[in-house]
Image (cartoon, rainbow, N blue to C red; front, side, top):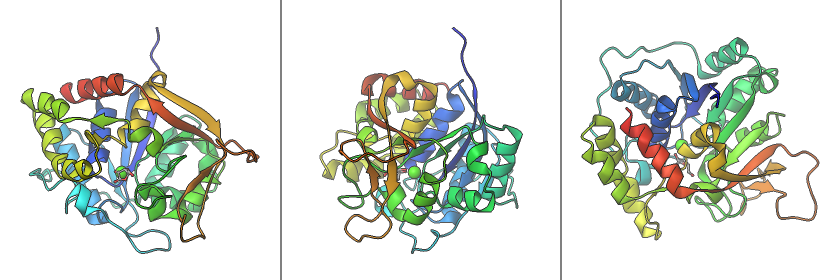
Length: 312
Ligand code: BDR
Ligand code: CA
């Protein structure tokens, strides 16, 4: 059968699982990665931007990398060095390539240009707080309509991780998330409901490292800090949160999802940053703005992800 290839932009806060997601996007034949923009989140903007260049070095690629926001729209930055290491990549030894290209164009401008070049075709994958995307949507009001759709890692139909109610990408910049969810763009939301099932286990990273490639060893090494943390919560592996939207685009058949209305809580203290969905309520929202992804075939997901890493 004929395979679809999609033009894709990735906005991210690289990040251990962001890095692995970009490796997957690079390897998947369904994805034509046009550019990467970085936001603050897991680490500072300096570090996430630097990590994008480090990844280009690892992959032997020169994906154009654009710098975005250094802080959320109107809140203090909350980083996650306990999970992602001080550098955002588990403090692994991975140099910035000497030939890295430092572009002056801002993330939102470069994203808009890509959308103009591929009207109604570009898939925007967002793997961190939505600050850059919200900034782009504010500056270019026609952008939501110009995109084909967005696929995000963020939120949860049920529960949270940074608080009992909120997932960290949405919690970091709830005002940005609200703007994006209310923009009219269709969103495939891979929240914790599905991403906590997408576990890479010790046997998987040992298998990858045993291939002897730089990519395989990088995956094993960069997840170790996150693994220490994940074990404390009784998880059997490290959640490949950010690979979920990437693999959803290429292999939607691995996932179970439902159309729903999703709105963002921006005012409360107890539930700040919650992705309020109408999946389980009597009172339905008017607009079904999201495809809420709820489940994944974990074993097939991990097999495809490992094949991607092995192909690098
Ligand atoms: C999300 O937060 C970050 O730590 C991960 O990279 C992922 O995008 C999971 O809640
Ligand atoms: Ca991320």
